[in-house]
Image: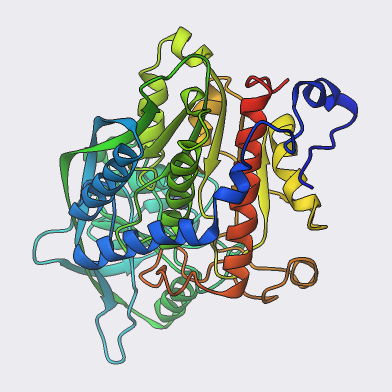
Length: 455
Ligand SMILES: [Zn+2]
């Protein structure tokens, strides 16, 4: 039923693939069940519950998640290693702002990555606007000395805006979201490569708050109180890598990031992908094909793909060349899921077969460099992945084709405290978790039976 049916430029691949219904043994997709996957998601939820509600990189909740993966894989006979690397661990100490007058406005500022701190007691200053609202030229900040400058997002980097303000003697910069973005959407930016000593404390505001401030400024003097402070320290975290002790070369790699964001337990993002990869490993251990697969559970993806980047950067050219494909699973149980796919056409064709059998077409996704496949892809390894959707909105036509609610986010709890086990237990989430688990298992088994040839 799930037999590949590849045509045209994929003809070579079709020849290499033994039909899945051959006598070569069990169907991996039958062994990998959504119940099995959800067992591990439940374990990640318990771990988060026991560790301040989060499994973020370099926290006790992450370490416990890594130990759970290690233990589970060791019991199945895998050789498991931790690959440590160092990250900058930041913790927000203060992130408040308001206008100082009757009926003051809560600014809800979001401190930018790389921002300097305000003094420990916060700061109070008059608010100004640059002569050009974008603040991309130093001369736009004439008259900004000693003030907090409110600037529009866009055209130049946040780093340039902050440097221009610093040069003019301003005390802080508040960047409001551009007109292209929803009025009440907050955003978190980064000062990038701007030399920190040449900047001032910088935070983002929604466009709605920006508009309120500009309106108040037209009526007179506005003073703001800001307290923006982040502590940063170097901490160690680790990737978890598992192989059979009978591992051979070349291999297919299957991976998922194991860390959550600090704000929540991360059961969809990415407890679901981690649980799927774990269950694939456990079931594959029963089939004997295990020597040609390497499983990876990445650390610090949420801080910028740090674990997978570290892993790829440590590979020799020969080691890199021995990785014939990398399959990535980052969110496969979104509450209002839709089936997205990305990556190499020959690899994504392997996923499509499973969905085609259910008369479902996978949605091409422009996830770009947004997950751990990116460092592999940049190093020339064919990659592919499945994704059940994040903060984007499901369209009416998608709801007709795939079920779920039109006009709602695929995952309305994305990167929030409500990304929990119960939140990922909707009928839509369970349906796509089941399908994605089957598709992942089928793709992996096809690759193994085709001697890992993808083109
Ligand atoms: Zn993720």
